[in-house]
Image (cartoon, rainbow, N blue to C red; front, side, top):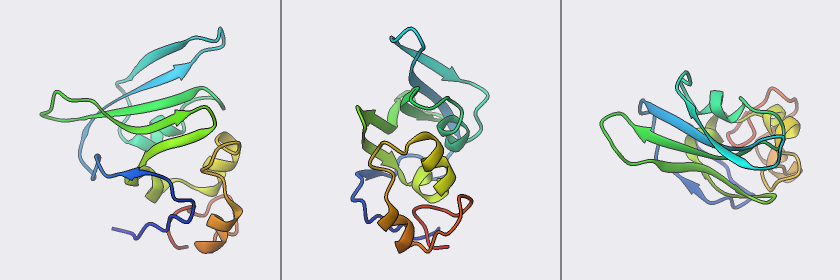
Length: 128
């Protein structure tokens, strides 16, 4: 596994750990209220993370195969990321953050410099 470089001091968890399972998300709809979406076709957390319009995604939950417990792997409170799974940190790119989460604490030019990210295709939290 890659070493995560987290200069932004985000609270990270390690629930997914490469396991298979189900995802569901809490999203804010155009009408302004929140709803839960079962992401039955999602094969990994990044397909859920990148699957909504800007400002819609609020929370991602994961339930490992063989478990009955849903665990939060991404949670947003206002404009602050409260927790994020290491699986997301290892795979998120500068482009993902700049296009969808630029107004949150995920965005940091100092973070990008610390991992030698130069383009939107570069990883944002692991060394490039």
